[in-house]
Length: 239
Image: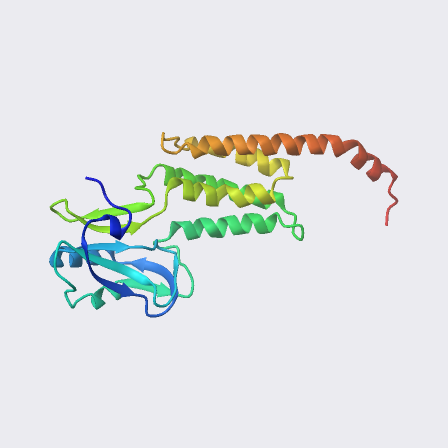
């Protein structure tokens, strides 16, 4: 059964929209109660935002669709099944935990701190995170929840393997491009802890290729600059 990614592709009738009353980041969603509501009212719910997304005031939280009929009058109950706040949390938002680790790494790689060893240590934890995510069945950008009869009841935004991988390495690769040890660790990351390489997760191989290119470039620059660096160190006067 093909699952539409947008409400207008579903062939169902709009039966109401629940809007966000005050802006905030989605911290948690009671998916079990959403599923029960949709089953009891014979509706399909489209949730256009993933957990962790910031939702402006007035933006849709849930779009309600039906085979026929209009609003049930109970749609306002759905707003209470979403927890929004000023900041993201990690309870239902693993991407935020990854975001925190990446921020630590790129801060360590900033010119003001210049601590690539800390960045390398963090990439070890990031590799373990990716191993866990890679061994978890991800439905992709669209997540589907069904009732006991197998009927689609909720279509929600999710995150793909590629989204996690891009978040994990892109900024570290950018800020650590001149660090041999950082590039070496990124290059080894897909092979650490037997990270799964599923057919749909081809981006793992792309990560190796990007890291190889940056590692080679960085090593060449270091080799080219080594004589001048040694000469400068030998001729500079102390103090």
